[in-house]
Length: 329
Image 1 (cartoon, rainbow, N blue to C red):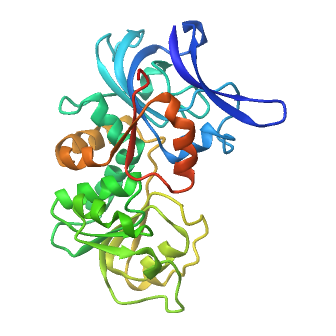
Image 2: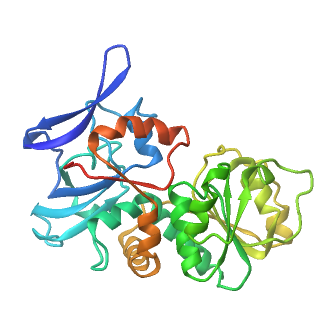
Image 3: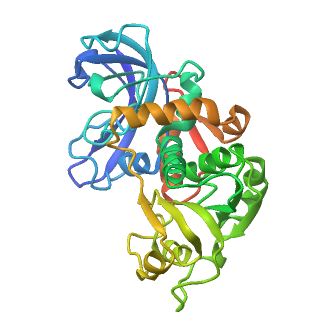
């Protein structure tokens, strides 16, 4: 038996989530079975806990796009019982049952060995959001960003990706300007290492001029939309923006002028289908470059029964930092 948060869909299209005890034969196909110690909550999980947001194809469904735990059984020679592993992405928790359970069965191709310096709890304080943040920082570095180059902007800074990006960049010695629409999070962001906090209203709208003063040496953008368009015109010559989200909308009301006249780079960051080598590189960097005290400051603990309410809150922008879920609680 295992315990899981199961979302069921009624004939009228409404959905409801409840914690249930299920027999092991309800687990999906896969060659590795993992005892899940921790999971986490992401924006996608909020969608999957409700209507499915177009991500869930079949019900009943167990959400949870991330989990970390210990291998219980394996037909994959790369993973042995007792190994600590982490899973993010691969549409687990969307098209296949995910990590909001005490046990999961998945393909061994989707698992990453957990670096020795990270606990399973710390791995889920990181989760998809933190992995995305690290991939964004690596992309900026690969395109020339170095400490001392100038301020690095992080939008949506109080959210999951933004919180981890702020902590990582600050820890690496960058000057971080954190954008938020929630003034009450200023103390939290400064605690993560932000050198200054930029009110969202200052960047929320586009302007007629395609170029403004060269301000940012780099940017991790979780907002997209009009804010991203505005930021592109403020980047320094040759600087890069790592785009990780679209909380402000998918449309990009920008011109090509920043790319043509300033050589600005717009880098798309996908964490769902990243190959294993890129994932291992990112997790190894997380183990060495993310300050544990700052990571712990982001954590909001939760159990399975807390997730329906937290899922609604994250969709409304009401969750700060990183929710860490103990399915055994």
